[in-house]
Image (cartoon, rainbow over all chains, first blue to last red; front, side, top):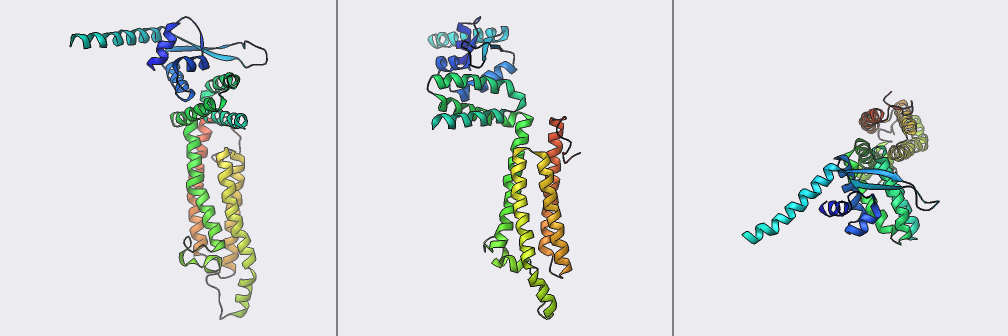
Length: 90
Length: 215
């Protein structure tokens, strides 16, 4: 989930498509979609349908982080940053 | 070859996700078109199917589908196998391995030649009814997995009617009805399981067809 949070938080205001997220994170569709479903259920991401870019193609489902998701991504980032710092002090 | 298989897998994945995840199923379907254009439809569809299967136990509709499969594979198909095995006389499935004649024609009265002649004359009819029971169970398993409750009710009625006819015919011919009575007991268990599942279905889909067993 951290990979996905990272990918979504990199462009927090931008809507992202499932296939693009797969390519960016390296997650398979079998991992990505259950994660997106759980994140949407928990109010971390919002989803909306976008009109197809080319006629004849289906509308695409797009996702972006909500406030709770952005906060979680920041918390994850800060804890990631804290771990090497702690290791350095140890 | 890969494209039709991938499409079939996507269709299956969409069915498995059910109504509660309909939007996500459509989302996967839309991205599948992108995966086709990218030349990776099979991996994408396989992942979606795996995700859909993993999601099934987490929602009521998926659990109901799993129960239907369990009922079909664990009860109805074994019953059909038992019934066909009886006709074929498969020794490791039927006690004694005597097959049809040893079970349905048990109690033939050789001391009464007229009755024995009638009993043996009825053997083809008994065999046909027994085969109909096996076919009925296979049909019931199929329509249950399909979730077609109108046909489940019809298949159940066919099995019930066949069993009653078999019982009455054997009783009229003074044959031993013990095995058929055991079948009736198994049928009662099947019926209770089907009614429980159909009630669950009716709760999930209140607007379903009025032929539901539970109504």
